[in-house]
Image (cartoon, rainbow, N blue to C red; front, side, top):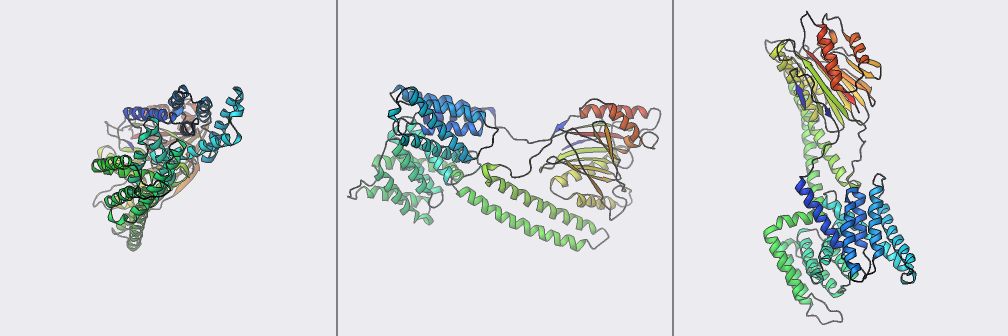
Length: 607
């Protein structure tokens, strides 16, 4: 919120829009370095001997999310090239990585659904392999089934990467995100060349999900880990079956806590190795106990971090968030209804107790607004790709102010503007009774209260009535102030004007000047104030010129609006700050030799 009480010439302009906090440069560099390393490790992991669908899907997925990630084609391609040097024929996969990165970075502005992007990535992989086989005259080495399998694997990995990065950005978790975490964890281990750590790493993740996730999620992790191990050439179905049986047994002991579950899982997997059957069951001792020891060490020191990570990717965090949100909604709704009841009770009085009715009414509206904001945030969190399902903001606003005090340095006018947070911007000018410090204090009180209550979700009419009641309660003192309020909806351009004893507002559209005028007594004079408003739709390039009565009435008090209209038509500049300064200079000059009133002019331009 910007509030000015003294004339400082040209004021700093403000442009409304979307503001996002940016991480520190060190954090961004670390994030980029980790992604670079991860892409290289994924590129070093072949599937079925000579295919790299995970690397192709990774570059495609990230480039489709943000074109800046096109650089990841370098480490992913480098990882594939390392495998090519060992004799793996994967030139087509290298071409697919580069092709997907360039393609998705180039079509970022085109809205594509997830399955569209996955299908395109798979098609690029099939096309690259086909072209490479034709160019090298090795078509006989690849059949239609292998082409289709490569495309399906790329599309499948695309879905998994999308789930992984959605959860890592705290957009959405669930089974898909958990499967993506499993793939990322296993491939990071395989990419280091330490294949003997594949199953210990898988068991570590299984124990983490078993203890900190929801019921049944371990089955997803075990299944995905088994499939990845099979594609990477480490087929050990006995391991996978043993882990499933151990996790199923541990689920029966969930109510006893994570330690008991981990012990049951370990015991079952170890004992199954003693069972004589056609299929080798159980888990190698080094795999099992290495994973258990690592899990115990990490849980001992970093249990909260591990819980948060698993909760981020599994459905547990989302489910807890929804439950807490629903409980909060019900609590706010009960409080809102209670405040409404009290407001109706005290609204029957016409004495000072009517202030309580206004207070209860404002509180009720603020609770309702808070509940609405939480509902919208929850909807946004769980809508597709976390996109806001509401009307897009079409306009931004450039706002400037110029002021001049009647005498000295203290201006009795006060003005301000506030982004209300739901695509609306409020602009206010208040003129206190008289001049100097007392007038400045009154106008500051009104301006701050109006903007503060509107930002908190209170209704405009109830806010103005409440301030009017407050100013009526001053014993033995005459206290009043004007309010000139405009609320601009940046999504549609619709603007509502409220004028309580305030000067007219001018709207400049090219060379046409429109006037907005509403008659009402200032705040603090009569009880039961009638609030009137006028609605106008503004367009891109329109100027909104608000002013105090010192500007609109002029030096003789007969009205200065015709001269203002001519001044505005003669100004060629499109900068609100320039318009404010030029108009203020012209009005100040007209007061030469006469007693001057406080002058305030505020200009807003829709961009």
